[in-house]
Length: 319
Image (cartoon, rainbow, N blue to C red; front, side, top):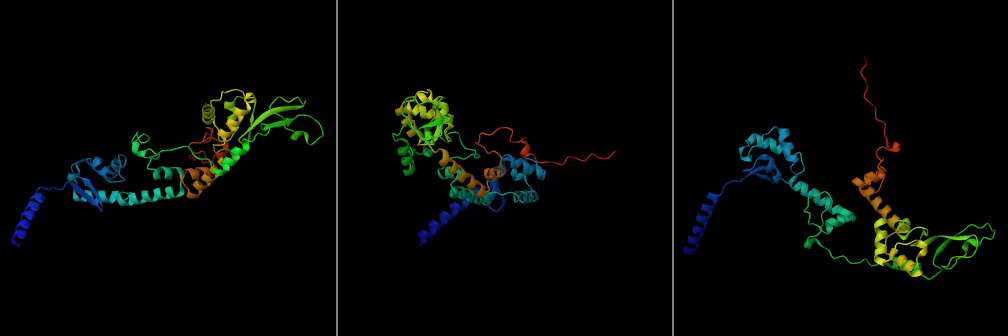
């Protein structure tokens, strides 16, 4: 019994000695907001979540306060400073708002929501430059497996029917079946018929251009994808009509792995409609018919006559 009292007395004396050596190193501004008192106000205010490098000088300028040490503030200045900071969304209120926005982005599965879910940085965040190469952020990505519908389409396109060459009839014969005749790969000897294009991925591409440029006639295949297809298949960039049947089939199989034409148009329309529904920045610009970041648009969108709005000029004072 006496031993326990003795030990408690020693512990209490030790705690009192430690508390006496403690000093208050922060100033309480408002609920949940404290700033260090040994730094100038310009830097001390940045310890509050929501007050950054630009906002801190703005607060001091509006209150006409000097950039002095925080511990030199009077009680009146602290009260005025707390009233000014309460006009902004800071602290726990800001954290709740940001968390709510991130949860909404993840729920609608937009680009930024997916990156938040994977723990990757998004545009607008001040992140380190090693975010893409950091080992803890790397996610193993393999080749995407084609869906059942894409496999069926690829199989259909690879069928050995006459190489799916589209024919344009220039003859003036009255026979309505003359336009439906198909010919083998060899040059046709029937007068009046001429091969104009090759069918790849459900799209007719010109056969008088090189493969690199012909593939770009497919919606969803641009310069980079066209170069990538030729590189992956190790196909020479020759004129399309000079392609062998095996090369043509391999190009069809490779193109079928991409989202092109109807699938891509439906996907883009669905994404734009989702952006319009949530009324985000890009959705509002789509509603107004303005270009968004990432679209290759003409640079006269701001001066286009159809987009101009009449603005009344200043009235000149009568002389």
